[in-house]
Length: 282
Image 1 (cartoon, rainbow, N blue to C red):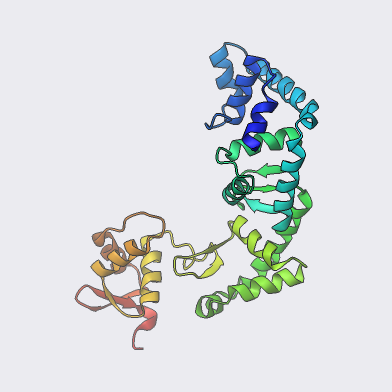
Image 2 (image 1 turned 135 degrees about the horizontal axis):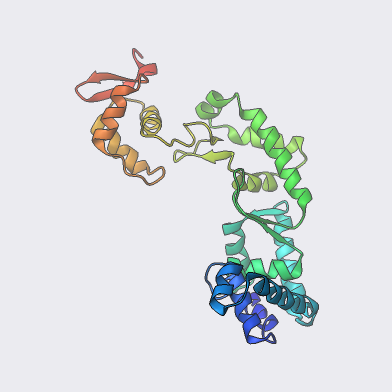
């Protein structure tokens, strides 16, 4: 098991070095701690903590090959990433490696530590454009970036077509062929990007579209009414918004009613009952 191998790797360290690595990499199952926080606990400077950490990591790197299982673990991890085009979303990767290595104790921070000492694969934290993911070559990140840019250009003006015909996959596959990326890799890349998303009704598109990522009560009401295909009383509409779930925030009936009154996209067709203005007369 990789978690056991990691325990073996730090076994010969001095007690304080062990504790510092455990805190810095969350090896005990907790969150990663800061240099300053650890220094405060031991009454030493953050620079001294950094020096002890670097010394411990250096020792482990020098002795890494002595652990026979390390090579096998790295081959499995690299092979797994390669099968998905070189990148894999963090939560999926951790779960899959945990299963592949049959290691129930393995967690995200074990892999962060193993990544640090091996230098063979890496973690990229979440940012504005991506969810956190694992990779082993910067070239694959550049390939994914290029793929996303072309896909975004291809679907940017196709919202009506995508939402009406649910044919996002056609554009996805076309972009993959243009970029010479496998279908498996293209579908996997999509999971990493924050530019694209799927609404609760299974429609794919750009996250900036309110039909894909509705954030306000108005947007949620609009999408639910559009999918319902017929007028709804504001109280029924509130219930349906809550049934769909969206972001988990509860829609209050009076709030829904207030927003329907103010938004010109909705038209009153009966006592407390609303329809979409675009559906009026149809």
